[in-house]
Image 1 (cartoon, rainbow, N blue to C red):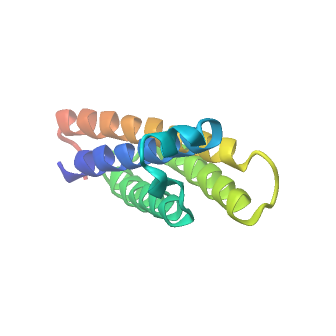
Image 2: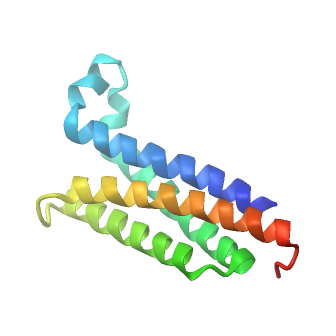
Length: 130
């Protein structure tokens, strides 16, 4: 079922985004020491953010069509809202704590993707999915 694959890719993208934000917030010197300074650029932050949000939107839409679970949809909504708000706060210096908000949003999206995969698998097992 392609819903589960979309959630796997989206969960990985969200985890990468959250770990990137976490590393950039708490250990930016580690990135430079490992020779990965290209990850510290604004372009890489926007790329990770964009991929995570795009897959979250796609997985939320496809997942809801499959399993009709409002709680999972709400989780995706909360994660996207946190991630977007945090990223905008960081990019435009709107308020302190944007990085922490983006990290939280990324982890909420990971949990939402996992929940969506479980619901889709359960739905597939029941064989009464739309």
